[in-house]
Amino acid sequence: MNTKLLSCAALSATLTSGLAATPPAPKVIEAQRRMDLTGAGSFHRIGMLREMENTRRNAEKAAQAAAKVKKAAETKS
View 1 (cartoon, helix red, strand yellow):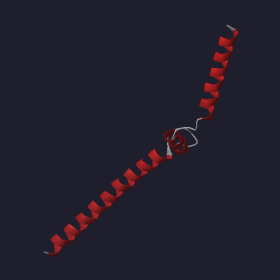
View 2 (tube, one colour; view 1 turned 90 degrees about the vertical axis):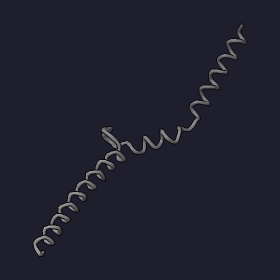
View 3 (tube, helix red, strand yellow; view 1 turned 135 degrees about the vertical axis):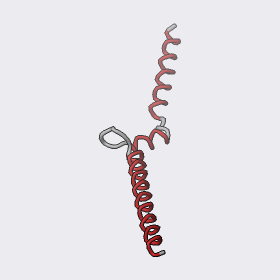
View 4 (cartoon, helix red, strand yellow; view 1 turned 120 degrees about the vertical axis):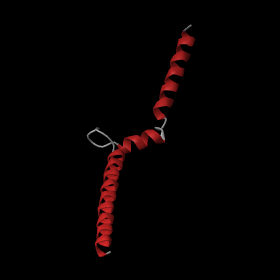
């Protein structure tokens, strides 16, 4: 009985040490790397939102410029 308990304890120690030595998965590392210091979100997500806002503004400016060109062309005719 004693040897059975000892072998179970040895097996448990071996499994536990093996888990502790396992490096974290690449996705976990990437998720941790992208987290901002406040924990409110990630730099990646904030960057994407900022990029969407910049795209919207640029599209709006392009539409305004096109309207000005169209208006100028109509007044010349």
